[in-house]
Image 1: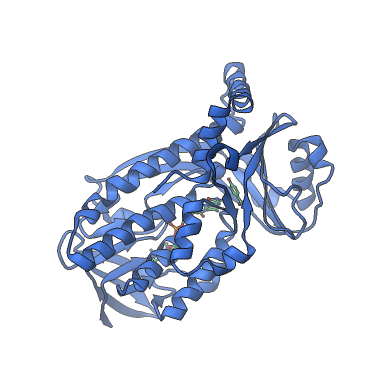
Image 2: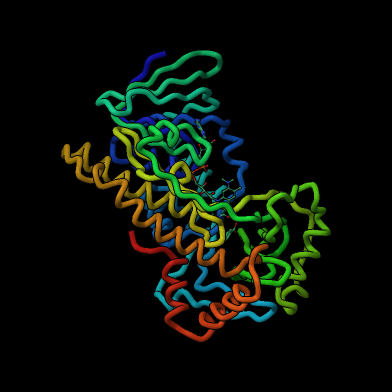
Length: 391
Ligand code: RFL
Ligand code: PHB
């Protein structure tokens, strides 16, 4: 079947859905092409912390009502170093907080908002190929239910995540990639238990990093640092809870309520950036262009800021024919991406145990934590970056 639209969006994760939503609300026609079923996309448990800019963008997209009712505003978080805790007060340091609300819920609301607008979504598409991206008439082809399809469009938005086709459609001679792979991952557990604390705790410990997070007053999310070769099957629920208890400060660990894991998975830690984020009529957004380690809670939030810049540029183009925003997109988005890269790398390096670290590096981690505890300017740096740099 041959079709035509204004913006073809490859990938129906948070980036693709939010972009489609903002464009449709501005009267721009889109088609979203997603490799998986909707149920599969909605079963993903990922990010949990929304910067204030992301919160406002979701509201502007008409997908913020339930988030505003059910999301929990956090005005600070805790850092613990070998059992001693101190708080970073976001509100006091920089005047804003964050919203604790799951990516799974955000995705669900975006789908509902898209349905209400009658936006076009194709699921379980295979063999997506992007053609003629360096011409005025790009095309996307794919197979669906055994049939071949083609979509002509003005622009293609590559929102298909780290393993998608979009980034790889940019010639290698044009692309420059920056990558750092960490020698560990995070083993995460979701459990229907009351969270151990009402604010997040990032814990540095001799046995490795741990994070106590949450989704709501009845749903907890915990992570522990594990060696990169670890398999989920190696960790029973009991072993996970025991290890988590050892890494959290004692008075906190004593109040931990445990229960069966309703989800358990391992995410490897990686930093990755591909430049440029635009080639011809293709624009990359979110994980298709960059990956951050989850320590700074920036992955989903960077997807949102990319979409903000791209939607503004496309709306400007369709309203007035002005291509300046599109021409500036890659540089504008990358400037913010690199700052979030730095923050995620800094917090990851500060809080984890690295196999190659000797006494010098360990002492530097201790001193950096002491600086945060003692110096308001250091806490402010952390608060400004954690709650989100301006768009
Ligand atoms: P996504 O969410 O990966 O969505 C991309 C979508 O594209 C589809 N796709 C294709 N569709 C058509 N054709 C193809 N060839 C396709 N190839 C792929 C995929 O099925 C998918 O639906 O990227 P997006 O939209 O840019 O959103 C980014 C966020 O999802 C991501 O940054 C965060 O989830 C990262 N992340 C986390 N971020 C946090 O801030 N905190 C976290 O705790 C956190 N945990 C995680 C994470 C990412 C993980 N991944 C990617 C392995 C945990 C995991 C396991
Ligand atoms: C989460 O709740 O899943 C979460 C929170 C903060 C992070 C990473 C993950 O830095």
